[in-house]
Length: 411
Image (cartoon, rainbow, N blue to C red):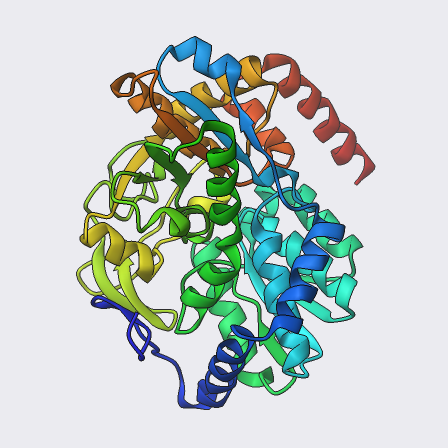
């Protein structure tokens, strides 16, 4: 990254003039905390005693035996308080907001995990929280909406555009323009104007640092490959960064292939080769957009992956061929989920299951001498309705039908 926040030709700061003071303040404090031992002692203390870090690196014996190839290890970010990796970044930025004397945080969320994490840390640290969420995502992930509200956050539905993550980001940015003197925008993914990509990646880097130390202790060697799902890019960058300096470790990101490569049927910016370089939401990266620069609708069974853009850091790493990006379809994801559940007794989030699907597709190209790490960025409790639909569970469908009838009668 250069001084202007560019990663190769991607990144930068494209914001209204009114936001420059807020961005300048954020840059200044971000640089200060990098060498502030008191800040990091507080950060790690809360992660240990409140969130439950370090998360384990679990040997997947059942899956390893099933495939008969590389030894499979799963980084268990699902065991964080809040059920996902999002709390690593939410806590760091909330502490940063307190340092900047802000009293309120705003956030965007897709799958709801970042919203829940933001609501949790706001309650823990005594901050007001407002969370923007597309109406489509609210309907798919209502359990998370319920918990956000219970933690005391205001959840604002976004009813324009595709009513998903990109629209929630737009609305959060509008809020920030009019409230930045008292409010910090707690960006959830490694996108947006500089310094947000670097800031989010910095707080998430704890994932890879732990995973590397844990695998060296367990196996005495580095992994052959590391897999992570890719939406905006925070969990992928979190686990990839520590391995970036080792060329023998292949880094593989897995995007949402949805129903296939037809535009509008997926959210794959890189793997399907259909994204174009553009500027939106404060930064320059690869977006799914038409020739006029209008953002296209996206789709994924996983609400947290249906973002139209991608982190400028990952766009650059893909261009440099340091990160290889693939896509997994909904059908592959549902099949992978069933396998993980029956072989390991785990329920990964649908987002995380994309990483499993990508790894399973390629596992035959590894040998028993190899080790791979799959980042399980979150757990799948929130996805029960989507999973049941994907599995075509008739008993569950009948149950939901009865509940819907009860609801209609009650109205």
